[in-house]
Image 1: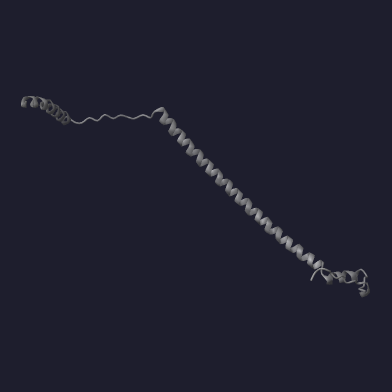
Image 2: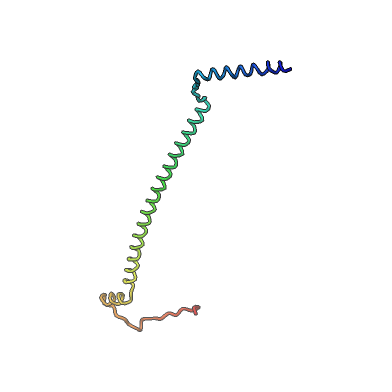
Length: 127
C-alpha cells in the first residue's frame, strides 16, 4: 500500500517539479484582445445615441423655456405700460367730468344756471 501511495503521489510531484522548472525559464503571458460581439456593439451604439438624443432634447427644452421667459417679460412690460396709460386716461376722464369744468363750459356756451329748472330725484328702495 505504501508503494501504491508513492506511485500516486510521485506523478503529481513530478508535474509540480516540471512546472517549477518551466516557470524558472521566465513566465510568458499570453495577451488576448477581447473583442466586442455584434450585440454588445449595437447596445453601446444605441446607448450613446439615446444619451446624445436626451442631451439635445434637454438643451432644446431649456432654450424654449428661455424664449418663453423672455416673451413673458416683454408682455409684462407691455401690461405695465398699458396700465399706466389707463391710469392717465382715468385721471383725464375724472378731470373732464368734474362739476367745475362742466359749469365753466356751460358759461362759455352762454348757458346759465337756473335753479327753477333743476329737479332733484330721490331714489326709493335704498336705505
